[in-house]
Image 1 (tube, rainbow, N blue to C red):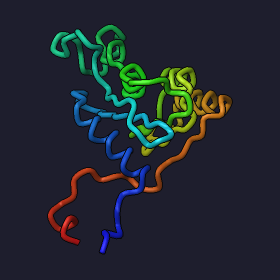
Image 2: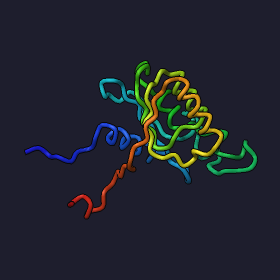
Image 3: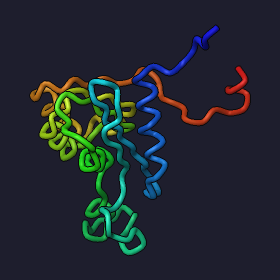
Image 4: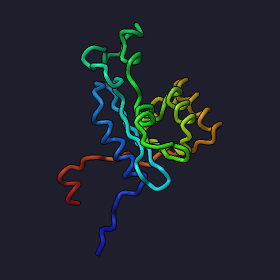
Length: 162
């Protein structure tokens, strides 16, 4: 008899986004993204980190009042990394992100042709960046879906035995 309680596709791909986020060295926010085509094949994956070829020991990971001394001047967001790391054209694809994308990532999502955004956390919903992001995504016809519950990557021994 087959196992009944398996992950849905959305849960599975969000789990891959979370797994990718574990590669991030950001001390405060680890974000992952996974891009999937219409055939449910992973075509891009990314996490927030520094651009290839730049040592993450030579640049700041802190938040700082001076932009050039802040991580925000240097970190590539998970969504953009997934787009840049993609293995094919992204028209019609879905992107799974652990944190709702900022306005800059929304521009890249729209421009790449991604049509569906599945996200988990929206903790910055009230910020100008995310408000602008949602406005642009809606205007471009990108569907946005929040997962009803957070994905747990690792279960405790008790949860695994249940």
